[in-house]
Image (cartoon, rainbow, N blue to C red; front, side, top):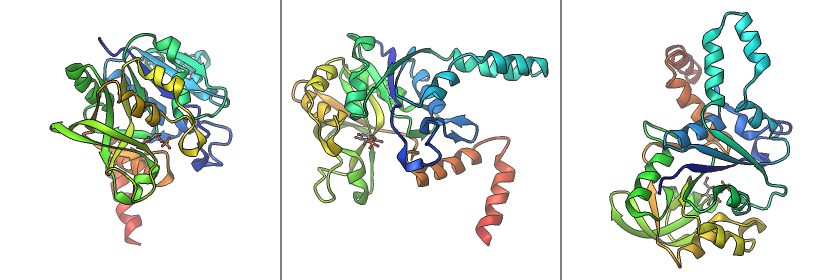
Length: 288
Ligand code: G1P
């Protein structure tokens, strides 16, 4: 069955970026000229996704406005003869069918994904975390969809991380079955250093069969007192095979300041209009 829907949880407070996120959404922070959420939606569209289901919360109106038509802006741009920009802005609202569901309380990633149960229905779907930005030719979601199409089972995006960093991630272990693809057997959310089953971390791309919802409904609060998606995956793995796929491309963790700054620099160095002057400028700054 084709993966047509993607769930994008965006209700988090973005506390690591305060005060910038006090009155606006972390997902609207831009890498050069596009907000993080735009890259996440592109990742979905490139994988053939048709419907984007945002799990949103208070203070996230900017995301709805961003993917809506802005009549005032279009009127203003037209009056200035900027027809190309009008088309560019329209393209954003035409990217997909956008659905918004509120997560009323911050009870964790698993709780957020469960909010989408009725809208997803009985079909496979993707989950995309906008914090994780993958820079390369192929979308991260597309890479997982390709594995899903071969095995018809849930697939999780993975990356090897430094053993010092395991406690920031969901960590898995499993047996390699083909280049970069694993059959997974162990799932631990944010293990303590030295207690992780491996250094293979879950990064923010997933494809699930709809059976994950039954597990989420039974999942009790885990790490940080929140309902963890990783815990539901662990119980699902007792009933269905779960695959993992190491992601091709460079992944940036834009959920923290350092990762966000690294991504900003690399995206700017990849921008045709900026790269020459920006590179020259960086060389000057680093010299001092
Ligand atoms: C979430 C997941 C975690 C995963 C991570 C990837 O954690 O719970 O399993 O490894 O995203 O970015 P968070 O970053 O929201 O704490």
